[in-house]
Length: 181
Image (cartoon, rainbow, N blue to C red; front, side):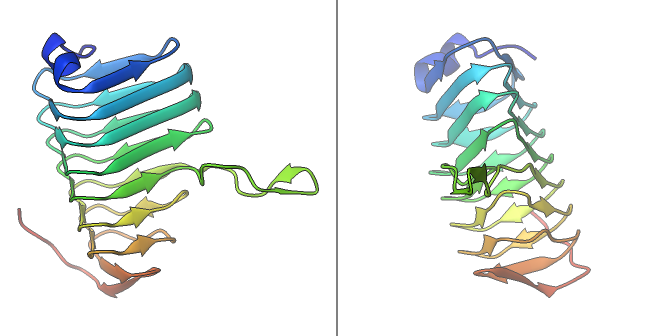
């Protein structure tokens, strides 16, 4: 693993402010991606065989991280965001289609009696998960390995492994499933 290659820097918009851990496998394909990392002690880890095309990655704050497992594919106009000391993990051999949004934070704090009531939370996507077009995964979600999320679904609650979830908010409609590439 290493930092961004010269080719990756030329083919993508990469803006890094502060000191962070960046580890990108040699065989990672980044095409027209926008990567922004601000704050301190954040990390971005992308494992071998992964392809990201026109993806926006945002890591803002301190001690936040995004890790993308090997042989994962993330499609056009997808958005991955880790803020406020959170961790976003995508398991190996997962597929995120176009326009998928994965956010550990609401983006802006909401206060009640001077206390933040909408704090950021980790997100974990298991191995071999498939997210259809325009899926949104909100903070605090855990997706079990082998699960499938239908087109335009919004995941507001965690789901177990090997299920199909669809809708807004997403509900499990099938269990004990498997799927092929």
